[in-house]
Amino acid sequence: MKKYYPLTKKVTLFFCCLFFCSLTINAQNNPANSILGTWMNEEKTGKIEIYQSGNIYLGKLLWGIYMLDEKGNPRKDTKNPNPALRNREWPNMVMLTGFRYRDGQWEGGEIYDATSGKSYRATMKVRNGRLEIRGYVGISLFGKTIYWDRVK
Image 1 (tube, rainbow, N blue to C red):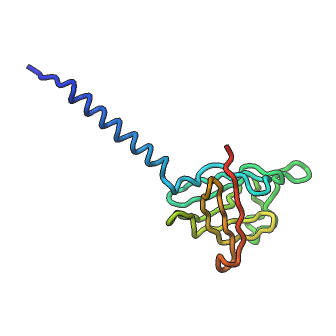
Image 2: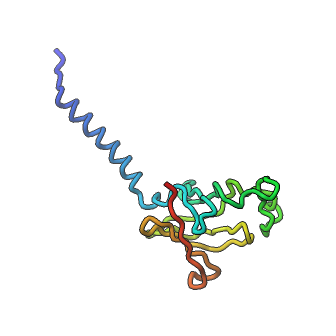
Image 3: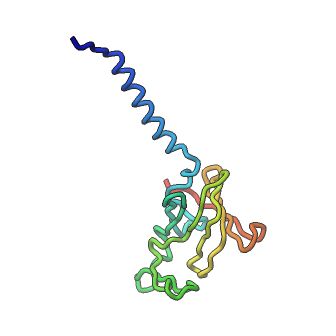
């Protein structure tokens, strides 16, 4: 005769559910992922989506008031120092590259300014719900900090 233990099955099911819920909660509360999402730049002229590829964080331009030229065509990256990239369009252009999360900030990356064609080394931090980006040339002391707000 087969014995049936309903309590054992319920306890096992409970712990399985608890385990999978904890995995979901831990993934959502991962501080490295707090940067993911869409951000509005300081001037309110562009929206940038920050996403993850492996352990690298990147950002692409989703929307901007200057994304179209005078004729209504997508603006090209004409000021890029690399001639091979001058024909790429601004919509979905990757502007943040190479960032890795370490000790509460994202570092080792670059931010690209399509209006000037210049790239700057940068670090990023989320502080009080805002994204603080420090772009610089050489060392961080010689740089500028900008703030982006999360798009809700």
